[in-house]
Amino acid sequence: MAKRLIPTLNRVLVEKILQPSKTVSGILLPETSSQLNSGRVIAVGPGARDRTGNLIPVSVKEGDNVLLPEFGGTQVKLGEKEFLLYRDEDLMATLHD
Image (cartoon, rainbow, N blue to C red; front, side, top):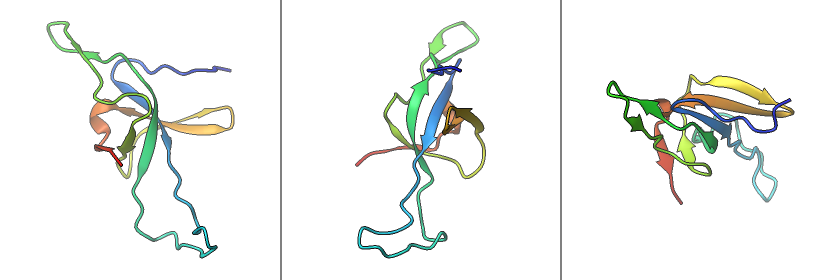
């Protein structure tokens, strides 16, 4: 089994951030409540090449929180954890505190 997965080209490995299903005080939150579809970048590829061979770097870095599209991405399971693999241009935004 692989201990570390390094994406190729302009792909980004993301671990989805699961929102808590209840508050600190114990109130259960409905699944239909407004939640951001977000994730944390685990690994990034080196980037893609343009027609002239110049490297186009990936726009995010490891540790960034990103906004994910509702659909898409390739599911990857490593051990017990599940990850999603996206192309750099499929990520919608970077989230900052």
